[in-house]
Image (cartoon, rainbow, N blue to C red):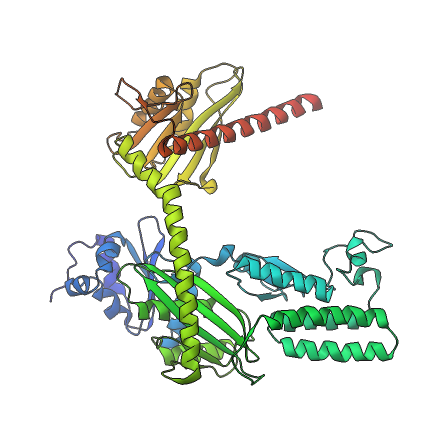
Length: 566
């Protein structure tokens, strides 16, 4: 079969000639320079050229969607396929490519961190662990998580706060006395020397063991302490320890015992798959008990087999994990691809021999079935939430396209507004919505340059639209807050930039009657006052108005302050 390279861009043809035959990873980039796929290969040249083989396109329908978007291929040579596996997992975790199987971005998932960088460590919730480590690469702090269920994280944090009485404030509130946290028995008062350094470090170690799931170790240690302080007639201190013991025993009461072996620790993975929706369920077994059941939502590209998606998701999970206390045995529902390499990688990463097992019978298979049942329940919840999200955002967008006869599906919407006070301090705003939700990273403020100390909304609109789209990066739908005059001003600005109005959608929304105007159409469109389409347009318009007024007030305060200083 001949290679189908006629559709390959010229620059890409040159890259294909220079690709080495070594092992390594390859990254495929689109025209924006975003990584859309990452893979590994024992022979990079052979693997990458296979993507441009007609047979590959027939056997792997995903390539019909992905390959036309590829504008550049980057490669990194590794010394072995195992190195390529590690690098692939880390890069997929970092870039979250569209056509790879990836865990849902965990920046929003909470973690708990013990601040060993401080003299008296605290336990604090954090979210972007990767960002924290990038900012503080030499940190001694330890991280525990991620918790896909924030409720479970806060419950754990509450037990730590009330049971171990670690410091809560980063800096002392008073110089000569403890703060209210001490009197509420939420802090042991190390900043006022109300506890010795050695005793404080003991409770830090106990808190760490608790976060690692070593509940029996913590209980044994606490009960020994309680006996010791009781013998020394320190009954108040003994009572505090007793309360902590009770809290931990309450946690243990909720846990399911799967083995009488207190040394048994395992990670159990199973999944549930429907269409492009998949949930990976992780059961954490520590000291013979199930201490947590963690559902993880998986982004699955089209035409991915469940076994392949499962394998990639498990690898992605361990690429993110920093906890050195992972168990020596990992039980999986499906045999992992490159299982030997994965075992070697994990053994090296966590500095212990790790075994990956795919059980066919017995107790371990029962654990898989239990995890799979939990995965099915989690997937049902994901699908319910997806339907709710669809009704909130996607259906109104579909209706918007139909009601206004738009050329494009309004995936990306931008809306403009002008604000001034009697012609002074004129400013403009632009808000961005993706799939019906605010995309605040792309909001823009405009301090007008061509309109000063006069009312000229039309020229103001021309200016901010011209400035925004001078880079030709136009969304699917542009909304102008105003009537025909503001709409025509925006239209002139776009035409002046050479933007083809036949390929984009431009409308305005006038406040008085909530009329929708379109370029070159005399009649306005009046939407049903109770329609979701009108509510959506009003929400976007009101957000642009709020953003403009906020900026206008900020500018006015700044100008008044400068006048006052003079």
